[in-house]
Image (cartoon, rainbow, N blue to C red; front, side, top):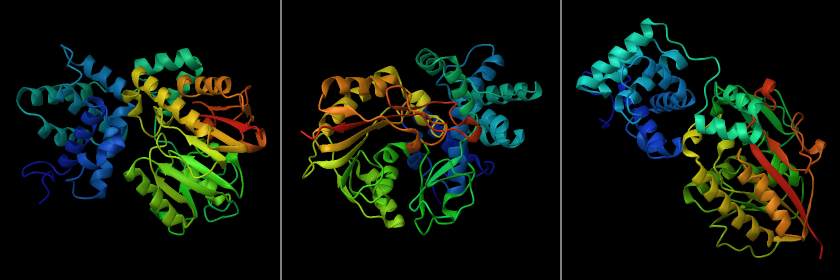
Length: 424
C-alpha cells in the first residue's frame, strides 16, 4: 500500500488533505511553485481524483488566504504564527467549506488527523466557533497586501480591484486552433483561431484533443505569435516551453526552432509536437550560451519572468514574487533580449513578451532596449492584429491588465513589444 494513502482509523480523504498541507508548505514556507511541488506532494495518493482534490484545496486556500487568516484571527485570543500547523490546517478546512462547498463535518474530520494534542483541540474549537457564527468569505477576495499596494501604485485602484475580482474563481480555458477554419468545438471565439471553454472542462475529453486540433493557451499568451503572423522563413522561439507560441508559429508556416533550457519542460514541447503533429525543431539549451546557426527572420523572446500576470490560474505567484525576485528576473530578461537581438536577420522582426504585471519586466525593458539598440525600429501593434477589447498602448506595445475582457472571462496579464531590424 502506498505510504500516504488514508491510514488506518482515519476518515476517507484525509490523505488528500495531508497532500494539500504539503503543497501549501512548499509554496508559503519554501517558495516553490505550486505546479512544481505537486508531483512530490501527491506521489503517494491513490489516483488522479485525489491529486486533483489536493490541488484544488491548496489553490483555493491560496486564492483566499488573507480572508481565511482574517477569520482565523477573529476567533483566536492570541494570534497563531504564520507557519503554525494549526493555522495551515484551519486554512484548509475553511477553504473547503467556504470556497469549495465541502460539508463542515467532512472538512473538519479529514484535517483533525493532521494535528495532535493541544493544536487539535485548538483547530476543532476555532473551526466550531466560526461555523456557529456563520462565517463567510467576502464576495471579492482580498489580495496580499504587498501585491495590492504594488499594483495600486503601478496601475491604479481600478486595476487592483479588478485583479481581486479576477482571482475569485478559476478562469475559463482558452484554446488556440492549429487551423483557423476548424469548427469542432461550439464555443465563443475572441479572435481568429481561438475558442473559449468553461473552466471546469476536462481537457482530454474535448473534441479535437486526440487529433491535435488545438492546444491550451490564454488569449493574451497568443498575442506575441500573432504579432509575428504568417511566414515561410526561419523563426526562433526562445525559452519556449510549454510551447503554445511555438505551435502557433509552426501552424503559421514558419520553420521554427524552439529553445528551452529545462529538459523536463522540453518534454512538454515534445508531447505537444507529437499530439498536434506540427513540425518544429527543439534545442535543449540555455539561450545565454546557445547560438543559432544563422540569423532568423523572426525571433520571439518569451522571457522568464515573475509570472505575476498568470495569478488567476496560479495564485501561488502572489506569495512567491517579491521585489528581489522581480529585479533578478529583469536582469536575466535584459541579457536575453540583448543577446537575441544579434540573431535577428536584417529586416527581420523581434518580439519580446513576459507574462508579468510588473513594469520592470515589461515597459522598462522595452524602453531600455529601444535606447540601446538604434538598429531596431518600433513596429507598433495594430487593431486588426489584436483581439477586440485589447488595445495597443500609445507606444505601440501591448499591455493586458486585470479588467480587460472581464465580461467575457478576462485574460492573463502580459506585456508585448515588437521591433524591426534595419536592412543595413
